[in-house]
Image (cartoon, rainbow, N blue to C red; front, side, top):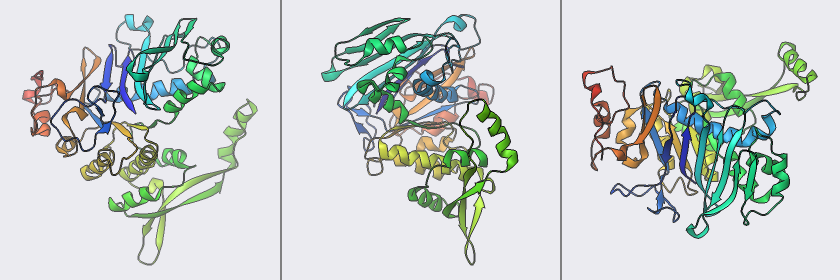
Length: 416
């Protein structure tokens, strides 16, 4: 379970920004909260939603989580010697950020123990990396990296020095250790591997097919699509021979050492009830909302089953409010989320702000100041239980709205 995420110097995020999923001491409903004795309140939030104007940088918060995960999973494989750090994208609106390192950090629960893992990267190398845990609530250093220097705590057993020598300057030690089968660090690596995510933008038929090609659709996905009145009742996978025009570019890549291209590919077709029999449609003939739901639901049920976080940009894209509420409610009820999965999602639909399952500490905002993204929770602003949060947001009481749209948009949020 995820407790906290911190990022600095990534895309539009210049200064240190933090998302917390630790529940606040509010009088709001506690029905959907996840028990966690390791935090002061005793509970963790099952979901948070992030609001903000267009280009406020809220999608970059989600991108930062995906980037941290990708660096952990791929830096040892994709980082070529001397080629710099893959995925480093610093803030570009001031010169100082070019040389300053990007910072990524997470607090999470693993096997009942709180862990803190993070790293700092320049364009050239990882200049810092660390892993701490808190057994019985006491801080313990497992490893720390300062440039090329590594320090290991006595609790971290294994071939640590050998693995440190195998870690390139543009590779994370966690990635190198997991690749070589380090028991303790492989479990931390697996935490990141098990995270699910969906980035924003309209889901094309080709993209949806590629992402779902190796999956069998969960019956719960089909049930949800049916209940959402999409007309979908079933599906089938169609395996087809690749045309020569499709195979030729792949064959050229194969000659350069890339994996041998497949001779076949599979695609998904969704069935709709016809007057006499079911009729199957390719995904390109489905609505953008149906394709978006299909992809999110596939990842959503994986997360609910495993208890892992799901990070979604534009959860409500092309969806009716009722569909978005239904997705959110799956995380915010213990009956449908017994494993303690969590959702982090950017949204625009203000109707969600009056959802009965959404607590005030589950609402976050993103806005830009001098070109840099700032994030803050609704709990930083003076509100009361029962306030109409949608009305307050649309009246610009909380900030994070377009400043030039509407006469009241210059109003500043009132601190708590």
